[in-house]
Figure 1: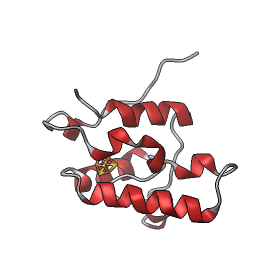
Figure 2: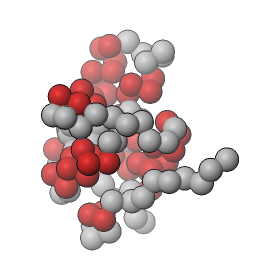
Figure 3: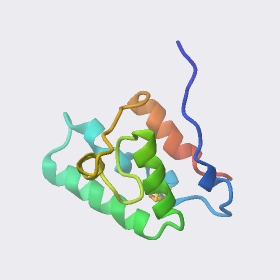
Figure 4: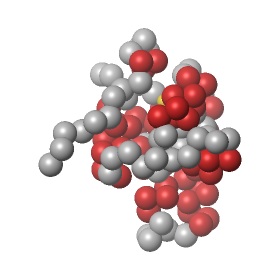
Length: 109
Ligand code: SF4
């Protein structure tokens, strides 16, 4: 098994408090649950993720980093579809479990 190849974005190191997504990582990758939830539930998760991103102090940096990194899921309030439409397609780095772990690792405490 290869080691986890995901790096923590530089803008997270200067924060004093955990970013909002660290406590609810499942909201930020609703498409991973496609087989278990309906569209309404998926849209609800995206809306809740966006609300958390809206009050995050690094939302713009996060969105830009996700675009450049080919991330999947909701980052900086932007979804896969929105990044794709802007010319930054999801490149599906790592497994769903790795991405969830990465989201959780944003909590610095
Ligand atoms: S903007 Fe980025 S770091 Fe902040 S809550 Fe949203 S996904 Fe997390």
